[in-house]
Every structure is written in C-alpha cells, then in structure tokens.
Length: 619
Image (tube, rainbow, N blue to C red; front, side, top):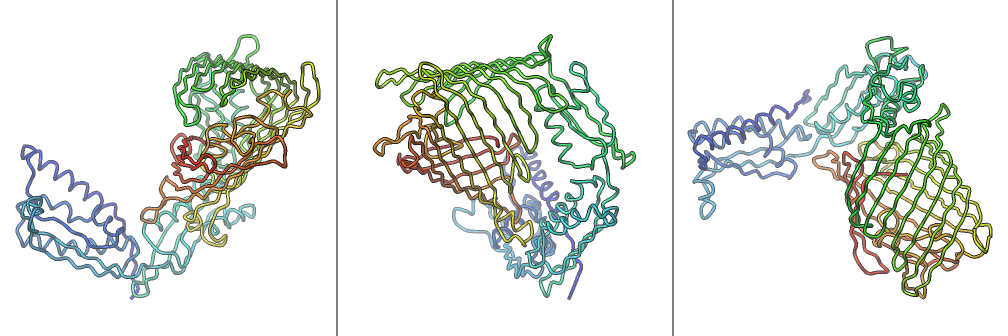
C-alpha cells in the first residue's frame, strides 16, 4: 500500500504550549495551590520518540483538567492514538504499534505525588524506520539554460543531503530542501524559490520517494552602488573597503564580506549591504547604509584567559588625525605576566588596497624566571583580503632579559626587513569544516651592538581541515562524521651566536593555540630532559584533532566534541629536539562572537591537567 504523507509537528507543539499555559492559569486561579491532575502519562518508547511525544502529544494539555469523566478520558485516549501515530511518522516510522491503556493509580509514596490520579500508559514499538527511495530533484529557471551555471547546477545535485538509502525524517527532509535552495540563493540567483515538494510514502516497503522542484529565477549582476550615511569620511572610503565591482555576478558571501570589512575597519559602528531585487537583474543597484564611528573614542576593557590570567586595557582611537588623515590607536594593557603600551598608526586604503602603517611598542613580560623588557619600532605597508593577507616592513627591536635565578642581564638589538603572509582557502569563516591555510614570516637583518653580524628568521605554519565520511556520500552524512584538523608550525633563527639575538626573536611554545596541556610559553630549551622556559633557535609543533558535531534527533546542534593530541619542542640544535606532548578532550560552540573552545588537556611531561579556554578563529 502506497500513500502520500506529509505531516508537520508545529501545530502539535503549539497545542502543547497552550496546555502548559492553561495549567499555569488554573494554578493561579486556585490561589497557587496544586491543581489535582485528571491523569498522569507514562511513555515507554525509544528515547527520540519518547521525547517527541512528551513535548508535542496533544493529550498532555488535558492532564490538569480535574473534572474529566472516565468516558472523556477514554475519548481523549482514542484521539491520542492517531496523534501519536502522526507524530511518530515525522521521524520516519510509518508502521508503529501503539498501545494506550488506562492503569490504576500507583500505590505507596508516589500516590501522594499523583493525587490518586490514574495513569495513561503509552507503549510504542516503532517498527522499521523508512529509508529514502528514489530522489527526483529538478531545477528550472534561468539556470537551466545558462551554460556558465553548469557547475552550480551540478553542485546542487552533489550536495543533496538526503540521498537514496538514508533514514527518512520530516526534519531531515525539511533541512535537505532548505540546503538545496541555499545553493541557488548563495550565487547569482537571489530570488530562487521552491516550486513544489512531495514525499510519497510506501509504508509496507518502508520507503519514501522524494520529489523537489526549484526555480532559480533570473541571474543577477551587481550594478551601481548607492551609499547612505556617510558624513565624516566620505563615500570614496566606503567603496575602497566594500570592493564591490559593478558588472560582476551576485555572490551572497561577497556582500557579507563587504559588510564585514566595513564594520571591521573601525570607521563604522554598523554597516548594511544589500541588493535591490526589484530592478533590472542585469544591473541591480547595491545599497550600502553605514553608521559612522565618532572621530575619537576611548574603550576600557577587562578580561581573563587561562594563559595570562586577569587582563585590563585602555585604548584611545583617533580615526582621522588632522593633516594626514591617518588613524592613531594608543593602547595600554596590564595582565598578570605582561604589561605594554602600543601606538599604531595606519593610513586609509588606496585604490591598490595597500595601506601604510607604523607602530611603537614598549612591553614588559614575565617568562618563567625571566623578566623581558622589549622596545620595538616598525614601519611598512599591508593589505588584507578574504583569501590573502600580506605585509612588509622595516623593524628595529631591542630586548633586555633579566635572569632572576642567576642575576644576569642580557641586552640585544636587531634591525630587520620583514615579509609576512597568510593564505586561506576555507569553506567558511569563522566556522570552517574543510579547506586549508598557510602562513609565514621571513626576516633578514643584522644584530646590532658590539658584535654585529647578519641573521635571518623563518616561520611557517599550516592548518588543514579534512572532512570525514565517504567523498561520494551525501553532505548530510559527511557533516555528521565531522572532520580531522591538522596543524603544524616550524621556525628557525639562523645566526652564528644566538645570544646576541633579541629575546623575542627566539622561540617558546605551549598554551591554548600551540601545545595544550602546558602553560603559555612554558616549553623552551630542554636541559638534561628538564622542561624550561628558556627560548631557543628552532621551533616545531604539530597537532591533530577530531571534531564531531553533537546530533540530537537527527539534527546537528551548535556544539561539537573534540579529541586531540598536540606535541612541540624548542631547541638550540636541530638534532636535539625533545618533544613534549599534550592529550585531551574538549567542546566547541558556534557562539555569536566566534568559535568558543573549551579544552581539558594532560601534559605528559608535567603529569598535570590544564584547562584551556579560547574564543575566535584566526589564521
């Protein structure tokens, strides 16, 4: 027997909510005294079904109706039979055995709790969960005739989330339809819509055939940009940050990134970027509405981290210094092991997207038993983009390290020319599930002072997200399997006498973003197998982490679990690397301000556990 079946549990959920409100009103009407229950409900079923019925079964809202007769309760039980059948079907169980019976009130201590009310007992044997049979996915509209959209059409098919053989549920079916539509909305077709959908259920065979028809609508291209809200900084600056090219294809992520660049620039408190869908699709107007930041502002902050403890900061920003139109940011930071003053000056971006920058830093750090005073001056240019950041600059740095245990003070100076880059190819930020990133820094210069000599410094780092699951499988199954994250970092300082190099140019590791299970910069040069915080010439770290989404009732939540292993070492001789390892577990939350990382790690070398907290994704 084949039937067509589509059922949403929204109405049942609303009725259950009304039942709870009704019960609260009844208690208030009785002066706050408990209202005798007409009956209680006991459900015996697999956990997912039990949870669904407990939340949405219509019978729930009548429990507080103490004036129900036995005949009325029996009528409600007959209605509950069909209601439960419909609800269980939303999970893909179309041939359940549901037995509802009225039992005598319990005896003993629980009798007082139920006020001698009878018990409605619901027993559910769900039977087999239906699987997806044939899938017919059709995409009409302009995309069907556009040869340039062949790849996008194929992507809708390839990323379909409910393939043949997958367990069927109403939630998974709704999610699959939404994801297919998003593939069209994300690029070129912002007016795409669902034309029709159909789920044909064959209860005897426990199969569901799916049909979905989408219409792409016309293809859109960006037209002229209309700017509103500019007063202090001008429309030209908005265009340089937005970087939207008239005549290019509409890409939803590019509008989002343009909006993000505007808000991240510091010149605007808020920015809204959208496209006019009512005009000519081939020349659609782009609207940018901004709320400009004040010319000057002061920000005071407090915070804490597992690496640096409590932290206090004060920052003053002057967005447009008179005469040069540069931004000046002066900041003071105080924490348990560090205090600093910095002054950063940056020009507005030009047509080439490159910006001039200069900075001064004065900092004092406590690194183990070493007090380090640093003074640094830097000047150069930089540019940022969604995929590639670059900078080149000249730098003069002086450090003074006081070794408290031996009462020795070393002062070193160096002048360098530097280049740094970060190349990213992640599927999304700040919550990537696949892709890679590669970054590096190269410095070349000379050690100053009485023993001048050339030196160079190189640091490379990488991160790779490998989705799990079979590549030919559907996206839904692959996302549930999670991903493996690999990361590595290597660095070296190349000089004849490293004791002449400024302390901050050498290496230490350990902490939230390197080797977990150890304090921040706790791992340094090892002497006779003993861990020290003495900096060294060479660095190597690596880590592997399995991140897996937490799934409830077949749907992914905003939380993930993590299992990881980190290792790292610092040495003065490459042949003497002695790696320190950390093992641990953690949780990840896709919070509104970025990824929240909570880890508990065991440092094998220290034989101690350490909590690590971190927010944000930076590469």
